Length: 430
Image 1 (cartoon, rainbow, N blue to C red):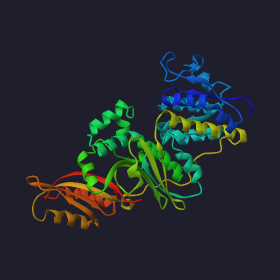
Image 2: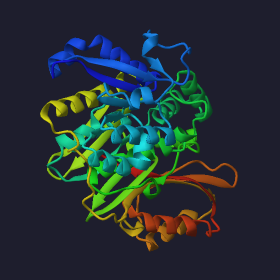
Image 3: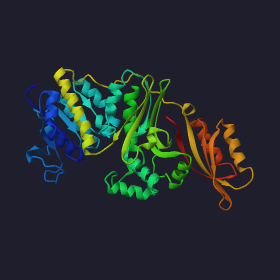
Image 4: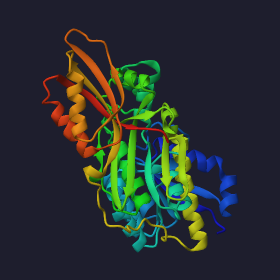
C-alpha cells in the first residue's frame, strides 16, 4: 500500500475532534504500522460555520453526506455523529458502497448490530466498534481475540462513567444524589438530560454488546433487566460502609448451561473486590473465563482522546486487513439459541433495609418468613429504635431471585414490618 489511505468522518464532535488530532499527530506511528500515511479526506458536519474544538481546513468540511459516502477516494468511513436512525442509514449506505465502517455508536450497535454485520459480510467489508464500550479500554478486542479460545462464564463491571462518578461522590464525600449529579453535569460527565445514564439504559446497551461477544448469542435490549441509580440514598450507602460494602452500578452478563442472564442494577460490592476500588468516571470490566480464570480491564471509559484512540485502533485494523486482503471476515456469528436464565436459577446475595415495629418477636417473625423460603442471613444490623420503629438491615447468603421476590411480597403482609425501605444485590469477594 503505497499511497496514503483516505478516511471520511461522519461527525466532528468530541470524539471526531480526537480522531482528527490523532491522525495529525501520529502520522509516524501510522506509517510504521501500515507502510503508508492516513489522511482525513472529508468530514460531514451539520453546520459549516460552527466553532470547533480543533483547527481544521474548512475545505474538508461538508454538509452533504454523499461527499463522504459516495466518495471513491475514501476507503474507511468513521461514524462518530451519534443517534440511531440517521447513523444506521449512513452506515448501510457506506457498507453497500464497499467501504469499511468504524463506529463508536453503542446505541446503534446494541439495537441494530446483527443487521449491520450481515450487510457488512455480504459486501466484504469490515465493521468494527471497539469504542462503543469502555472508551479507550481495549475491551471488545480483548474478548473477541484475546479470549477467543476460552469459554467466558461471566462479565460484570462498571461501564458507565457518569453513574460511577455520582456514586463515588456520594460514597467518598457524602454528597447527595442531586448535588453529585449537578457536579457531574458541570464537569461534562453527564448530559443536561441524564436519564439514559442514571436510569441504566446506557449501561444496558453496552452489556448487550458484551453479552453478544462473550456468549455468541443474539442478546437484545429487551432481554436486559435494568434498574438505575436515581433512588439510591445516602442512608443505604452509609449502611453499606458499616458492612464493608461499596455501591456501584454494575452490568452483569453470565452464562450457565447455555442459559444467559443480563442485567444492570445498583449493587453493593465487597470492598475486597477489585471493582470496589474503581472510582469517579473510570470504567472497569471483570471477566471470568473457564480456562483463563479472572481478568479485569480498567481505564478511561469516555473522553475525546481515549475514545478516539479506540476508534483509530479499529481504523488501523481495517487497513491491515486491506493489506492482507481479508476484510469482511471478522464477525460475531450467533452459535447458540438464546435461552434466558429463569428466576429460580439466578442466585445472589441481597441487602435489605426494613422499617420494623419495635416490639418483642418482630425480628423472629421476619427470620421465620425467610427460613421458610430457604433464605438465611449472613449479616444483621439493627439501629436503635426511633419512637415505635427501628431499622433492620440484613445481608442474606446466596438465594434465588425467585425466592427473594417472594420474600419481598410476603414482608408486606407482616404486621411487624412497617415498610421495605430498600433492597439491592450484593456481590462478594472476587
